[in-house]
Amino acid sequence: MFDSRQLGAEFLGTFALVSAVCGAGLFSAPSAGLVAVAFAVGLSVLAMAFAVGSISGGHFNPAVTLGLVAAGRFEINRALGYIVAQVLGGAVAAAIFWFILSGLPAGKWNTFTAISNIAGPNAMVSSGVLEIVITGLFVFVIVSVTGGNALVAFAPIAIGLALVLFHLMAIPVTNASLNPARATATALFGGPAAVQSLWLFWAAPIVGGVIGGMAARWLHNEYPRSASRRRRSRR
Image (cartoon, rainbow, N blue to C red; front, side, top):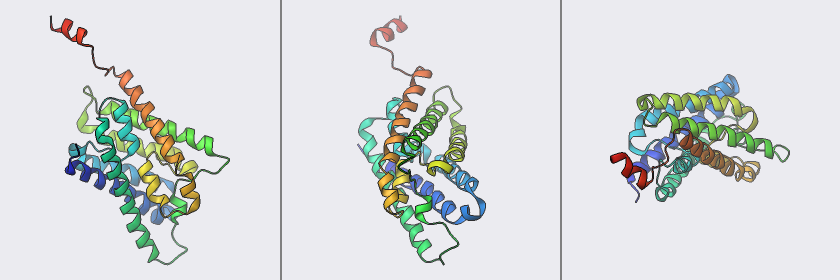
């Protein structure tokens, strides 16, 4: 049921994505701002989708995996393995950057709390709605640009640039999760506030991903035809 090469590709892809979040968020953002983080994350997904997308499909995100299940593009019995690989890949990347940060002088860099996904008690609903919307749109883009009528060879470019866009929209509010594996990775080292908010950054992206997958499946008319319709079409 689980292909080790596919799981390895998902681990590496998510490792690269969270490395981009941590590296740009901790070290570049204090001087370059949120634009650096947005482009680092988008470019990491673009690069890894080209690098290993042909092996695993290039999900790198539990919300994407479950969104593709909702879109009819991925088997539900394979989803758990993908999600575990994604969470582990993100956690290893965050641990490495925590180690790097711990050896640097304090004061010049951001902390893991600063780059974690945190929603205050008065912004829980707004943060959740934002994450649902941007993740839904992200999964909609993924399903749309990887369909039969799309130029699939260029799909990683559209996906990476879409991720840049959604990060530019959401970093000021939630630090832009769109990805439970990314949220978990930074929360491991982000302190109590990050851990307490983590449920939201699992629930909202998954809800958004499923909505986006279902919307794309409907819009692109990818529902399987019934047996009777298939028989009529062969006559």
